[in-house]
Image (cartoon, rainbow, N blue to C red; front, side):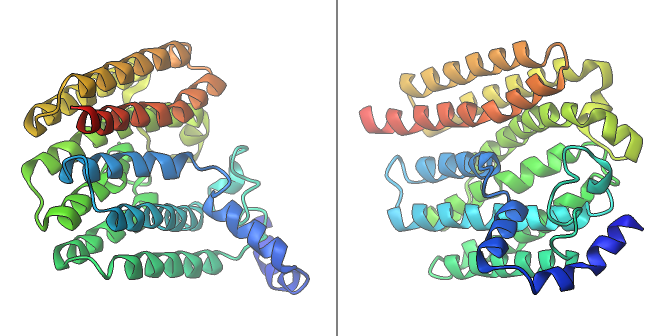
Length: 303
C-alpha cells in the first residue's frame, strides 16, 4: 500500500520538477552514476571486437558498440527496476531507488527503456544484416533477464549470456559471420559472470531468502566461495583455449595470469562472506576484464 501511495503521488510531484531534477532521476534509474555494469558489459564486447579484427577492428564499429553498450545497460537497469518494483521497497540497499521512493512511475521506466533500446537499434543500422538479426535475441535477453530470478535457480548464468551477447554481434559486425571461437568466448564470459554476480548475490543473500528470490549464492550454499573460484578457473581455461585458437602469444597469457591473480585477490575478499568485502570483490571485476583485454590488445600490437 505504501508504494502504491508513492506511485499515485508521482504525477503531482512531476509538475514541480525542474529539468535538472528529471535528469538526475534518470541518471539514478539507469545507474549512469555507477558505471561498473557498463564496464562488465563492455569488456567482453571489446574482447570480441579485437579478436575478430585481428587487433585492428574498424573504429566506427568500436564506437557503435561502445555507445550501444551504454544504451543497452541503461535500458536493462530501467527494466530491472520495473521488474523489481515490489521487491526493492523491502531491501535496504535498493529502497532509495527512484521507483521505490515514488519519484518515477513504473510505466515511465518502461518508456525510457524502450527509447534507449530504439536508440541502440538505430546505432547499428549501418552494420550488416547478420548483426541486425542478432540484435533481436540481444534485446530479448536484456529485457527478460530481470525476471529470471523468480523462476531460474541460477540467473547469473542467464546474465552471462545477456552481458556476453555483444561477442557474437562483434564478430558478425566485423566478419559477417560468427565463427566457433566467438561462442567459446561467450561461454567463458558466462562463467566469469557467474563468478562476479555470485559475489554480488552474496551481498543480498539474506534479503533474497526472505523475499523468495533465486540466486547462485543460495544455490551454491556453503560452497559459494569454492563455486566462485571454480567459475573463475573455468573462465580462464576457456580464455586460454580462445588464445590458442586465435594464435595469441605470450603477452595474452601474461594478461590471463594477471587476471588469475586478480581472481585470487577476490578470494581473500569473499572467503569470510562479509557483505562489504563481497561487494568490493564484485566491483573489482572491472580489473579482471581489463586485464584480459590488455593482454589481447597488447599481444596484437606488439607481436
